[in-house]
Amino acid sequence: MDCVCSRCASRAWGHGHDAERQEKAHVHYSDFTPDQRFIVTVDLGTDQLTIYKRLNGQLQQCHVCTFDPGTGPRHLVFHPTAPFAYVLSELSSEIITLRLDSEKGSFSTVQTVSSLPEHYHSHNQGGAIKRSADGRFLYVSNRGHNSIGIYRVDDAKGTLQAVDFCSSGGEWPRDFELDPSGEFLIVANQNSSNLVLFQRNVETGLLTDLQHSIAVPNPVCVKFLHQ
Image (cartoon, rainbow, N blue to C red; front, top):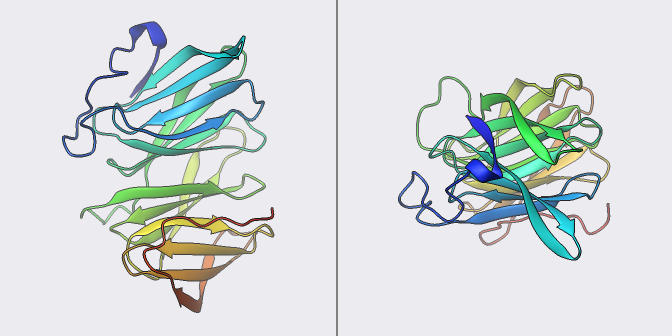
C-alpha cells in the first residue's frame, strides 16, 4: 500500500477492483484537515485519497494517496492533536493509519490493521469510524460481523491496538456516534431497524450494552445537534 504523488496517480477517473462497488469514481467522504488549510476526499470507487488546497477561490490538487486495489476507503477521521488520520475501508475491512505532513499537504502510510477479530472470515463491510474527544480511543463499525471495534491509540506513533469487539445489538451497524460527554455511544443498526445505547468507560474505552433499544426504520446516521 503506497501513497503516491498526484502526477503518478492515474486512476482518478478509472475503475477500482470491485466490479459492484467500484464501477466508477465514488467520492464517499470529504473533510478539512484540522488546520483548515487542505480538503481531503476519500474515493471508495478508485481506492484513493486526494488532498486539495484552496488557492484563489479554487481547489488545487496537492497529493493522491493510492491504496491497494479493492480496499474501498469509506470514511476518515483525524487525531485531535497529533498529525495522524485514520481511514476505514469498506471492502477490505481495514483501518489505515496515515501521517499528515501539514506543510506539504501529503500523507504517508504508518500502519494497516484489520477492523475484525482474527477468527472472523465471513462477509463484512466497514461502516463508520469515530474517535474519542481526547484521541485515546478509536471506534469502527463492522457490517456483517455486526460489531463495534475498539482500538487504543498510541499518541506518539499513531498506531492502533485492538482492545475489544462489542456486539452492535442488531444487524448491519451503518453508523454510530459518541455523545458530547463521551460517556455514551449510540449505534444505528440499519437492517434490524434499531438504535442501541451503550455506556462507555472513558478510561478503558470499553462499551457496555445498557439494554436500551428503540425501533427506528432502517437508520443510517446518528448526529447530536449540540456538541
